[in-house]
Structure formats: C-alpha cells, structure tokens
Image (cartoon, rainbow, N blue to C red; front, side, top):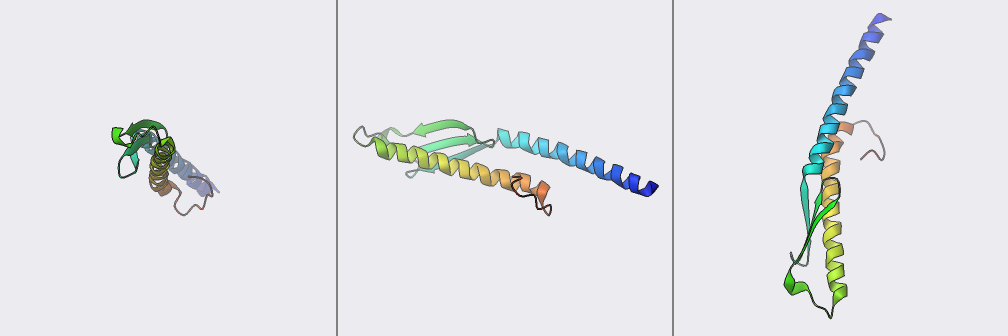
Length: 107
C-alpha cells in the first residue's frame, strides 16, 4: 500500500513540473509576433501568440477611395492569415504537453 502513495506523490510532482513548463510556454507564446499578409504584402497584420492584433500596416498604393470594399477584404484576409498562423503555433507549442492524453478541445 505504501508504494502506491510514493507513486502518487511522484506523479503529482511530475504534473507540477509539467504545469510550470506549460505556463512558461504560454508566456513565451504571448511574446511571439506572427505576421499575416494579403494582396501580395499590400496589407500586413501582426498578432501576438495570444492572438491579439498588434499592428495593421497598409501600403499607400492599395488605398483607393473608390474601392473601400477591396481594402476591407484585404485587412480581413491578412488578419485571418495571422490568426491562423498563431493558432497553428499554439497547437504546435502546447500540443507537446498533451500528446497521447487525448484531451479534446484542450488547445
């Protein structure tokens, strides 16, 4: 019976280590900058690893007062591109902690 408690304590220590590593990985993700583009680089959106929009850059030559819809579409496309890349980075980074655990919806 005593051996079971030792295993349980060891498992708890391992879980605590993993929690610390996960927290550190989350923090590092927030410091990453991911760039999404549209229109051949005419619109660039930069987001953090926490999926917060940090910058929106629009080249002057793409601004056409007669075609605001195109500009809106480019901003939307660049934002979605950046957010998709951030999501992929999050899955790659945090997935290392959940490999083999089969936890649906975790990351």
